[in-house]
Length: 286
Ligand SMILES: Nc1ncnc2c1ncn2[C@@H]1O[C@H](COP(=O)(O)OP(=O)(O)OP(=O)(O)O)[C@@H](O)[C@H]1O
Ligand SMILES: [Mg+2]
Image 1 (cartoon, rainbow, N blue to C red):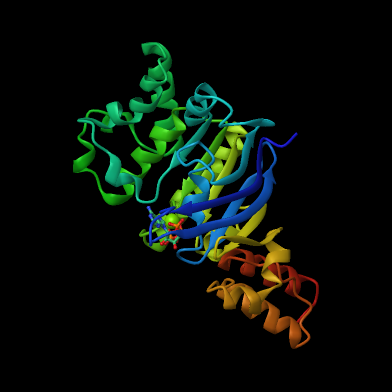
Image 2 (tube, helix red, strand yellow):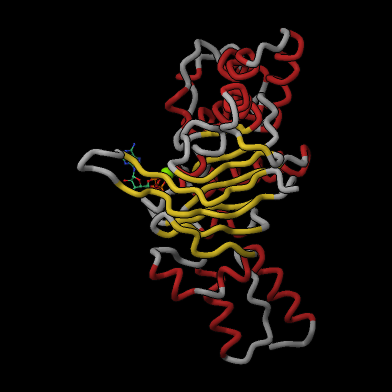
């Protein structure tokens, strides 16, 4: 059974007002336990709206969200539980830090879960380690940290709830290339170490190509593609029409292939490219 299943889900904002808008239109897909799935789409395609259904923050106008086969809106209790089972890290989460210390901020979620002090402490330390925050920062005010550090505190706060599914909305947005890589690496590391199911939302193909097992492409509130990274990237012109671009480096490799170089095209980063060129040269290519 899939850990998460989305069935015929539609959502409208502003129902009954002149501003009514269909943000999601008959969405269907599922996510398996332990998978790392990326949800990609141009701005306004419905990504943030969609993921807020996964922990019952939004209730579908039509359709269902099943967690382990059970409708999360079956009862008030199941909707409440979903908040903890599915950890949602919002876009620009650093704007939601509010406690007086880093420690208290990371502890906020587990404290709300009613855990005892020792368990909260264990979780705070573990989550801080996942995001690379040193214990010497625990007593600092989150407002004295750099943007990248604040983001890590916010992410640790969600990880400390030890959710079955971790969802991150644009975790790398607004960071410089190095900062992006650090955040994506720590998410990958978290997933490898915990075996958790992770859903990462992004409008950057470049960012998700190297971390995701599968990509779900949203376009105007509908699922356009739901496939492996490779298979999705093979639809370059359709993606471009949806305002999405495959990574530059991938394009270069597919052009080289057209020129007769026997190179692989599942190359998404500069590191992948270097490796593939070396492999090619070792095999006697020129
Ligand atoms: N609170 C709201 N009230 C009314 N309409 C909304 C609201 N939030 C989003 N929308 C609309 O719903 C559609 C989907 O928005 P959503 O924020 O889910 O897109 P997104 O893919 O997350 O975009 P982005 O990449 O910019 O974050 C858009 O047309 C948006 O204008
Ligand atoms: Mg969004």
